[in-house]
Length: 254
Image 1 (cartoon, rainbow, N blue to C red):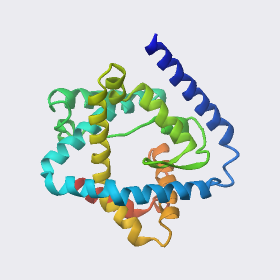
Image 2: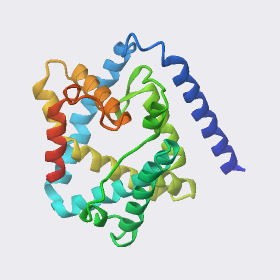
Image 3: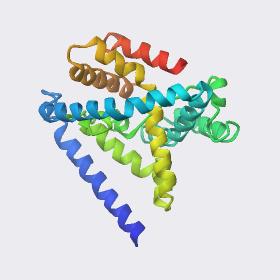
């Protein structure tokens, strides 16, 4: 009974968020950031919290953990994310990509020891990431208002809807929680957060150093990158912050 109630509640939340996205998509086209005052407050909270807690933890993790071990955990979490990617490939009718991404997941989950070794990458099978926010964008749903989420950071009304949907439907960490493995779920979620924050160390330093208004810089870079992802990279190169592309490449090499 409890499980059915939980599923029903999640369905209601997803339906409400989806409806809200549809209603606000057109209204926010003229102003991509109608909630700027609120967003800047959340951004400031995130920035203070990050500098006091999350960034030092990420730096310590990077300092004490050998690079091959960090790469292994990064591969593991990327492999878990492949389930979400495959589902959204199917929802976008990208069946060839779904087949390739499912094969990547199977190869890494077996020969790659639960994904810790990126065997598929060694065979030049690309790592693609799709989420429900991209799926909504693929089918014509606009961004809606730009949002800054506590602890999570840049998002939009559409992408927040996508995050809720993906977390409820295709996230293996959520599944471990649903079957009662609360401690394991918390450990996995914490590890995932630290892994992601470590990846972004160089990028956040760049934002702080390169911009007079880090909030606006982050907002514009996020919206441009999401536009590129929705269109499978067809957004003109000049619209994307090249600095972020270089930082991403540098972070992956380390």
